[in-house]
Image (tube, helix red, strand yellow):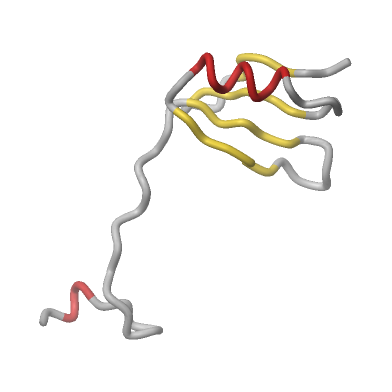
Length: 72
C-alpha cells in the first residue's frame, strides 16, 4: 500500500474529512465560540435554535455570516 494513504504519526489509514455543511449552530457563551451542530437544513437549524432556553447561540452560514441569534 502506498504511504500516501497512511497517517505518518499513527500508522492509520487515511480517511477523508467530513463534508462541509451549509449551516452551523454556534455557542458563543463560553470563552471561545464552539460549533455544536452542523446541518444542510435551514428549517431544522432554526427549530433547533428556537428550542434553546439560554441565550448565546448563533446560526451562521458556510461563509460565517450571522443569520440568526437567540439573544434575549
